[in-house]
Length: 240
Length: 93
Image (cartoon, rainbow over all chains, first blue to last red; front, top):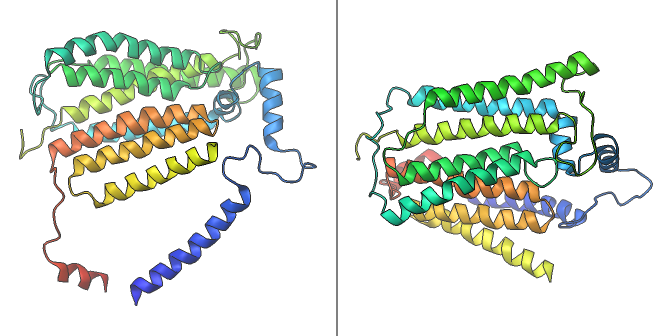
């Protein structure tokens, strides 16, 4: 009886959700059927290109129009990393005692040594060109963290200094908040753009957006590398 | 043409999700979850959202999968069978 009720409920909910999405259509570029109403996106697109001179609209919204939200996101990531570190801290083992299923072959070790600089370079490219091409601080930071992950998997005694990770992470966070406060002093609101916008499609354009995204990239890379390092050095009590 | 491609990708996602739930070997289940993220990132790219596609590819395919694999290595690889069916049924009621 209960199962039938659950199936009935799911069917009703699914019917209405499917109806809503059927009305919108899958992958449409605009939702507004009535052309008389000017959508919000047009305002954003216009301001992004004409005032900020940024070619990637997503970046301009994430860092400039919704910059305070991004600061909140970075804080959430920082808090979760801190919580993970504080839970796993006591159980952490010394370098070299990492439990491995099997040691990496020479192909894997030399291959990762070759790939590691390329991965870090790609990540750096992604967050430096965040305002020109798809990507940004979060994506670039995660790509750099996967590079460190590759090295940690390939070399059993590869270690990352927690002190330098903490320093990089704190400096990046302070830069983000400091740029925001500078905007508050110059323009009147937090994270206000106070540098000249430059020309469209230039590397040095968009005011404070590249500075903030570089800070976010360093911060995310340091945090996620710390997470991977902490989790990898966590040793199960029954195994290993 | 694009509609057929998107439909095939969506069906692949559903199939991988069902496989991940049914599979008893958790390592295969985690790989299936990674396939869901990979297909989702292709889908985001097809729908002209390259930023989200990059995020999904980097976090969903690489980072989450690896953290799950490390977790499986430190715990159990095979999913346990429920030992007593009657207990579970009485809890549901």
